[in-house]
Each structure stands twice: as structure tokens, then as C-alpha cells.
Image (tube, rainbow, N blue to C red; front, top):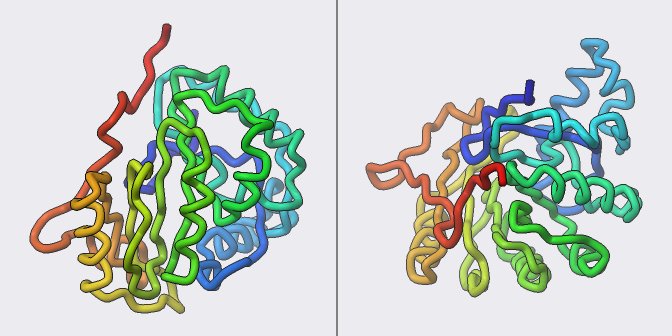
Length: 244
């Protein structure tokens, strides 16, 4: 069975890599780090190294066993484009995604510069979506790297949103996810920040997905923005490829 996801914009998670290192303010209260230490304390062998970057080679072919098409978040517990993940390993992950054409794979990274650096060494089948995380105005430049990636869907995750963001370069960007931070040390989110991004997406014709307000838990604050739930997805192609 797939690792079912509680994340609203995906169906399952797949972690051929676990562990990471912090590179920007959005990493400060990393949920994956907290979970990894909890799993280590529970004696889970896969997290014996806690949040130290670990290649989980035995997990690479896992999606090939999942016959029901689904959207799969790649490396919810890591970053596939971390500098310590060899490009040869990334190529193996991409080869599986290319073979498992009945799934949609959603990759998210903060290391957008490395994606652009290795982009020509990877296949980019239509079922692979590439995204970057942008937490405040200072990291909008990650989107410029993303725009040079030939993915069928390019998306931006603005989670946790920890400051206002204006002038998002949304040309060539198909989808934006916005969410507040959760956990014991969460930083506040302001409605005007969310509305500013929503308005930019509506003007650009980019799908807008509001994931959460955040709080003590991810679902504590709910998902309602101005009286409705925003669940927009990329509108320019079929979301779930079928068997051919």
C-alpha cells in the first residue's frame, strides 16, 4: 500500500531520500525534522539516522508496485535536490517516475538553483511536476530558476508563508499553494498576505490552492478564506494519466 497522505493537495508520499539540512527561514520549524526524531525515538529503523540525510535505495522502485493511479509527493521527508544527493541517484528516481506513467509525481525543493543546474541530465515526462518553496519576498528568485525547468506543471509552495510577497513572477507557473505554519513554535500568518497572493494568481490565471491557516496542528485553523475553500489545481492538462 502507498503511504497515504494527510496533505490536501496529494494522495500519497514516497521517500527515496530522508533527512535534510536547513537553508532558509522557512526551514526553521521543519515538520519533517520533528517527525523524523519522533520516529527515531519509536525505534523505526528507516529513521535510525533521525534527520541526517539518508538515501533509501530500497524505496526507489516502490511506486511501480502501486497500480492505482495517484498523485505522489516525492520526498515529503527530504529534498531530492539536496547537494548531498548524487545526480546519479536523482536520475534513478526520475527513471522510476518516467516508467510509472500512471502516477503524477509532485517534487518540491528549496534548492531551485540545483534543479536548473542538472535539468539537462534528467528526463521530464508529463507526469512529473516540479515545484519550489518560497516563504517570503527574499526567496522569490527561486521561481526564476523554476521557470527554466521543462516540467509539464511548474508550481510554487508558499508554505509556511511568514511574510508578505508582492510581484510573484507567475508567467509559466501553473499552480500556487499557500499555507500557514503549524506546530509549537509556529510563526503568524496574516490574511492580507494570503489575499495578495490569491489576487496575483487570479490575475495571472494561475491555479490557487489555500492549504491551511495553521496553528497548533496543521488543521487547527481550518482552510476557509473569505467564506470559501480554495482548491484550484493546474487547469492546463489532465491531472491523472491513465494506463496506456
